[in-house]
Image (cartoon, rainbow, N blue to C red; front, top):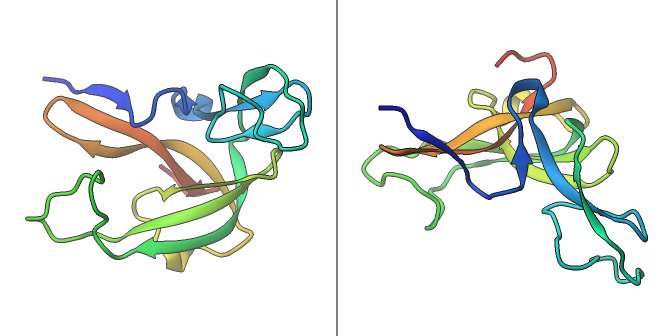
Length: 148
């Protein structure tokens, strides 16, 4: 039985492999780009507002900051309290073109010891959780030059 692949948050990312991208929105009046996406109004307080168009965001950026999650987060985070907690690495990445910072997990197997501020990373598809019916997909950051 195969699992249904379902994005953790609809319309925040698209594609597979080298075509995988985060999706933001850009205001036609002030050219501000937003992620998470904004579909109702321009969040720039100095803008009178314009049409918001979906735009794919940069696939690469530079590590702005990082840390590790050494505790089990509360619900709605999904984890089995019967299993030992496995720390994970969080990376804040400044996107290349948009100059905005986007937070996400590193690919599995990349601990904080392998990271440094300023190193180049790329976005890749990831899995947040799997149950009997569903693979919940998300994004991960991977240092450039590190295989999948």
